[in-house]
Length: 178
Image 1 (cartoon, rainbow, N blue to C red):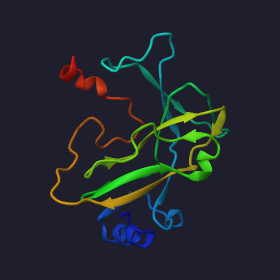
Image 2 (image 1 turned 90 degrees about the vertical axis):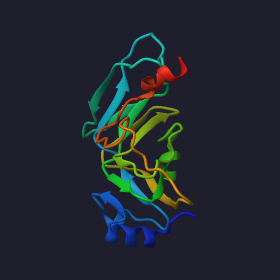
Image 3 (image 1 turned 180 degrees about the vertical axis):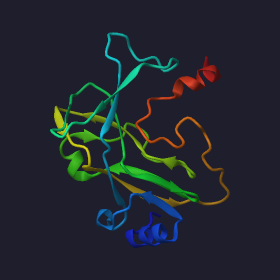
């Protein structure tokens, strides 16, 4: 069961959910809108395929005031303005329907976080046709679900505490399957 908007507000006020900065106008009936930060990360352009067993060069691009044009076939990593953390809830993110109606996907597979995650959210942005995006737009929404039973909190250093979009860290696990 997902928390309702008023329960999210109650928990933000008592400190058991952290959303920073928090603006009550971004609260929804059962979620909270998160905004797109002003930095995108993309992988270096060349004809070489991405190799999940190797760290890949990437670069940051600031979204200008006139917006950034996203093109199909590219991977763009964005992040949320808002830093979030919870100690005992499963956070999840979904794109806003108004964003999806423009053909923008905000996550490829990472639609939920782990209990204990602390940081901004990296968004895996893709588009079906060219779309101009802007920093500060309400791009997605976060929701929270209770966790049943005993659990172990997220403690990996791969993404914990991130404040900018972070490229894939899967290469750090290569020894496990190579």
